[in-house]
Image (cartoon, rainbow, N blue to C red):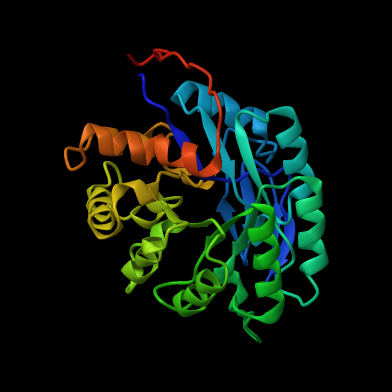
Length: 307
């Protein structure tokens, strides 16, 4: 293909066994999980053991010609720091991994210090989960700001998903003003199908803030492939902040319960709304520079048995 493709938003875990808002999330069988009171297809059904491993992801990446991936985290999968550090050691050239603290409780700063000391170059906050039934954790709280200053000093990237619309945008403006050197990647393309999404996109007008599209095929699942609404949203965001501020992300593996991994980006490749150069930047070059990926493997195109 001759194009660098990097996935700026993915997930890995070996088993789900956690709770969110008092509701259990547990790995079952055949790729299913108990999720917030119902059984959901969390993984493709052929992943029968429920293990969302780096090796299976690498096989998908190689087939889809994706050179590298950023692995984020989410409370619904449980904290995966130990496994992700193992992944980082085994595949340092293919994965950029993010650590995560238990941000829903006070006293997480020492956890952040340990993550930095262990060598994590990114920390993930699923900030939409900080709006809980009985309380809210603010991104501009004293403990959060202390952690952001540590990350800024240490060159650690903040990967963050925000609640719908502008709910947390004001808090993020304060964080960015206080820590202008902190590199920030905002996920889920600003929750693009919700009212006020462009307020999140506008945060990328700040020098060190980027937007990544992890979950965009989930958000536009109602219209499905080739996701023309998603392409229009990418065009709108590019006109708003510049294509050089946008990165592609798949939200693997949940999104490939509905489409193949290659389909999660080839709708962009086939679109006529973006130029060839814009596609190169969005699909890989922006992420390569932002996350500091080095030399990536040359991945040949492998014909499948339907061709």
